[in-house]
Length: 212
Image (cartoon, rainbow, N blue to C red; front, top):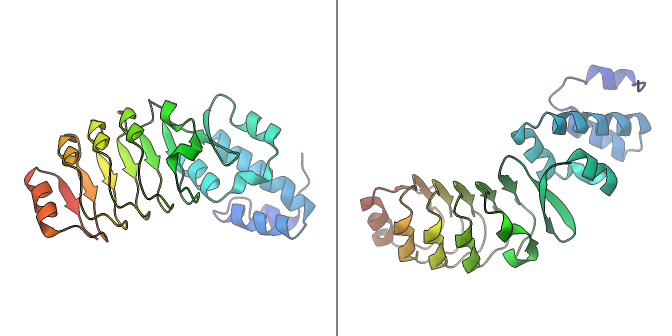
């Protein structure tokens, strides 16, 4: 059993233990580093997606070697972006805040035909590829806080899509294919350059348009 310093025992069950242990690890505390990795392994092993998503987005897994990473996520599918392997967990993929400019740089994305939720928020996307229409099982697609000026017509092939986040982009119009998204329940369009006419047309089709 790993010998733990008293302050590590005190914080063992704290919700803030992971950020605290990272600070201590960066400060060069060897005990903290050991416990830090142990606690991350426990949370990954729980397979509780919200926690794993948080660990991935905050780059906590960068402290593991490639070999450790493979063992930790044995049995998971992966995509690659700029050399980083990112796991797909419960048909959900988070690529939030990765600095992505072009989705073609995300290796393996188009092959994830069973993917249901994709988070691409807070990137630098200016357009989406036509191949986005192949991911027909999407239920939630978050494209908020990018630089999109238009959407491809193939977005209308996302027949399972229920939530679409397009807020905080640079959209001036939407493709007619949006009307084919019959499963769509919520459409977030705030902070774009869309006219009221476009918004009203969507509302008449029964789409819940949210402007924040």
